[in-house]
Length: 112
Image (cartoon, rainbow, N blue to C red; front, side):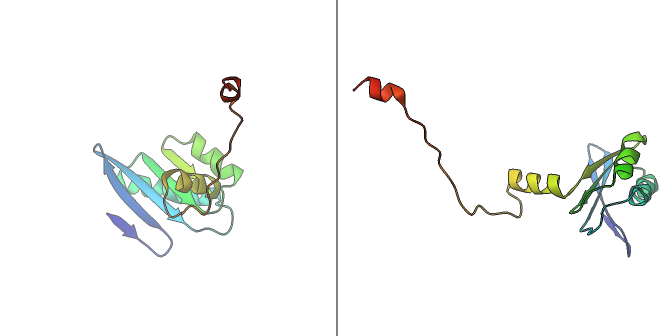
């Protein structure tokens, strides 16, 4: 179920009878604590204790500190971590080149 507003899209996922909210945005500036405050409020509104915020940017230090100190579990995925996850799971990426690295097999030459 997705809840759409002008400024916020929250996807509520049911997993083992738990609600997990996910918010993903393409922020150009660092994500401030106010965004996490609003998201935490969205969690309360649907009765969720866990959520994930994904950004193409990064979170300010104060936003990270806020996420660490509140009772709710909010996982923060910034642009760098998002890119690593996309490559790891092959989502939205395609390989451009592949390189093989070789080493000398000394055992081969000892048998000759």
